Length: 515
Length: 83
Image 1 (cartoon, rainbow over the protein chains, first blue to last red):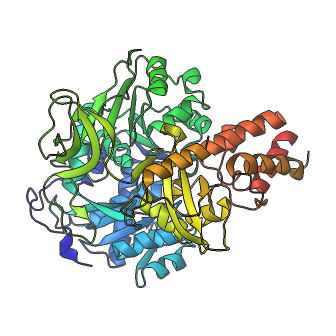
Image 2 (image 1 turned 90 degrees about the vertical axis):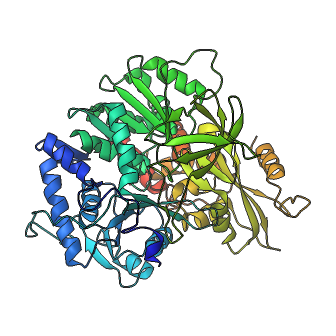
Image 3 (image 1 turned 60 degrees about the vertical axis):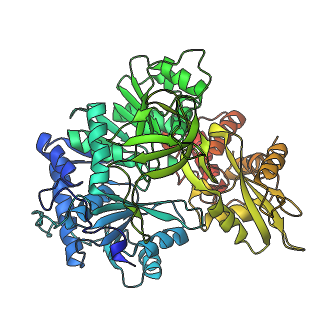
């Protein structure tokens, strides 16, 4: 792997040693609230002082295993205090962390681990073989019960500050890739800090706040939950990944944890209202609700807005490649509003604008592709040349006024399934891997929270496969949110005159069949 | 009711509503892991269970372990009924 591709020590930082780095954010919380709770998980919690010590001990264990500044460290753990501490430990050594989806099937996790070429993988006992097959030679740091990878005997004194600039790589988040393989979005310390500092100033959290952590750690929404909480000495309560969409569980969680600042995809909030009963329970602790990752349909958002009149609501927008680059405050939902709320105006120090098909900038009322430039724009994709200049989001927006934009749709084959980014090509590759399948196309059917992924499939002569077979084929390679919901068998996929799969015709066929 | 008494109606319901009517689901098929029921379908299946058997599944019991397959769901319901 070409280390020069993405910066360990690349140009553009705001100075050596003295630069503020991402892990300094935890230190800020430690100074504000040393004996306060930093992170809570089911049945356990840890104070800032304890988390600081745990991170230092883990950092020393990483150094003992040979991790050096500029390395990557994969973290393949359930969402837990240990995982949070491991992320901080990796940064303290000067390496970059790569969170691996704990719910992904082993082949997918192995793909991410192999691609990122880590020097160490932090994981639980029982996953040694899977890691070894993904990246031979990678060393392990086992944490959790019965792990014994490090312990009370490992000193908790801090390590010397790593020789990094704030342009160094801090973490890699893998997202669905259009070529059928996940791709790693490389985020620097200064990329992350630009967003975190903006969000801290906007949300004005205090040390008594309690943040929810709904998103998994490989999803960029989690950056706000953890680091904005740390920046203010607040606590963050981790929601276990397995049941992040069971509405009644989430409402019970908000009440039990006395959550004050909630952040999730709109789908989760919709399920918290129905069947979760959020509006009836109406937890009094909530003071801010933030959502991002997909459009919030108007009808449920209006109910939510009306149900929490005193609560601040913010719609945030941004692909993983730029983190949050625009936001919109939802202060009212008038009855006449029929369209989804805007994605709003630029934030995090970024500049955003829309470019029309003819290459000129969109004026008010025009539509175009949204471009983002500024401090949150990623370093690039792992293993590819460094990204330079503005980032083209692939999202079509409408310019509403001088500074506000509304989301319209996508340019390409990327869809959102309950806030998760899904490249249809990756689903198609997984379905096509089934031996009975001659060719397959993945088609999103329906809208909003009801969106379903249908596989249009033409089978080999004399062969066939059931929906369960195809789900299983997906489950062996893809995260759960990319598993197809239905299958539509066709003698052959419809083609356009130039031979490409006719997606418009397919969508019509699949929409018809699902009625 | 026994565990088996719970399993068959739920199996039939999932096959009919979430598997295009293909009857190959067995009691150990991983429901969440293979995406047989996703988050939305889970809500629907739990609603069916609560209506059909007049049982309330408390949120604290909605764990990945309890909802893993038909067998674990049947075991959970039998336990809830006995409680």
